[in-house]
Every structure is written in structure tokens, then in C-alpha cells.
Amino acid sequence: MMRRIHHVGVVVNRLADGYRFYRDVLGLPLLREAELPDQGVRAALLGAGESELELLEPLGSSTPVGRFLERRGEGLHHLCFETADVTASLASLKARQVELIDAVPRRGLAGDIAFLHPRACSGVLVELATPVDDIRHSPPAPLRLKRLVIGARDVKQTTSVFQSLFGFTEVAMNDGPRTMLAVGRGALLVVPAEEVGGTEGLVAVSLVAGDFASLTAALKRAGAPRLEGTGEVTVEPAATHGVHLHVSRYE
Ligand code: CO
Image (cartoon, rainbow, N blue to C red; front, side, top):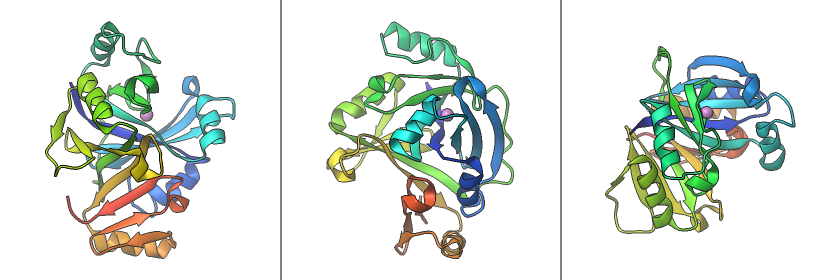
């Protein structure tokens, strides 16, 4: 039912500052930007392989995103799955008494969109989108979204919620406390909240770099605080507008 992770949404104080890191340092191409008064944001989509990264700047402090920014600061806000027919997806969720924010789709940056209530998805704010036009992904992004990490009080329960609502299949992993669900070419990694500082909900983003050496050089030039290993780098939230960001050399 869900084709891919369409995007992951990040709240920033100002889009221009977000561009300085995500577009200018990481090199993600800016695909579109628009003001969405009904959602109280100015939003932008940047390409990241099969998926996109959405930056959200609140239009005022009394908007939902403005209140989020005041309460939590910049950082991960929601994830979005692409569905072929958002109206049909909503109807089937509604028939199962799943708690929704939007009973009917509205027009957003990603197409026709609707939000589920975070209570329905183990504390994760989930958006569904059916694109209404093709966004041209050229030039191709130098980074590809590999997976999103979700912190859970009960990993098995959160996994089964996402499986039952969206039909995702579990990816075999070594026995352990974590589980992985495939979503298109991407994945959701569910980890115990205690592994991620007690945080429940969206906690981190993993990307793959086609040219890892260029990426690490760009991070160095920008002076981005980071932890560098041989095949991966973790960029600290101070540089990424509140996002725990891992970039690896390999798939
Ligand atoms: Co969104």
C-alpha cells in the first residue's frame, strides 16, 4: 500500500539557514519551495535519492509548527509515506478506527496529503501523500535516504503497529532488541528508546553518500561538528538543525 518514504520533515527557524546546511553543505538539490498558509508554514523539498527531505519554517509562533519549535526546538517533525491513493488509504484507516488528524486529504507540498495522529503510530507523526505532479530529480542528489530511526518503549509493539497500519515487511536482522521494516528502497529501524536517550518517536536519519570523500571534505570545510569513522560520519545536531544524522559510505 505504501510505495516509499516520500520525505522526512524537519522544523527549522528559517529556511535560508536550513539551505545553508542541507543544500549547500550536503548538496541536496532544492526541488520546490512554497508557502502553505493553511498549514502555517513555508516549506521546501530537497532531493535525497528515492526520498526527499522537507524543511518547515513556521509562519508564526501560534501555528502548530511554531508551537513545536518553541517547545522542542529545531529537529525531526514527521515522516511521510507515499500511497497511490491517499483518499482510499484514509478510508481504510478510518474503517479501522485509526485516529486521524485529517479526515479528508488536503493539498500540500508533496501532493494530496493527510496526517495521522501521533497516538495512532507510537508517537510518530505520520503523513500520507499522493503526488499530483512529477518533481524532476535532476541533478541527482549526492546522498540517498537509507533509513529513519524510531525510538520505542516497546520495539515489538511499535513494529507491529507500523506493519498492521501500512503493510510493511520485516527485514531479517540478527537477533537483538532492534527491528527493521522495509519501505520501498528505504527502511524504518525501530530501536529501544533507552538506546537513544529515552526518546520515543523519530530520532535519527541515515543517508548513503555516493562520494563519501567529497561529503566528508564538505563537512570539514563547513566546520560541522561530527564524529568521523572510516565508513561513516555522524553529524551533530548543532550543524543539522537538531537532526541526528548518520551518513555512510555503503548501502
Ligand atoms: Co511533510
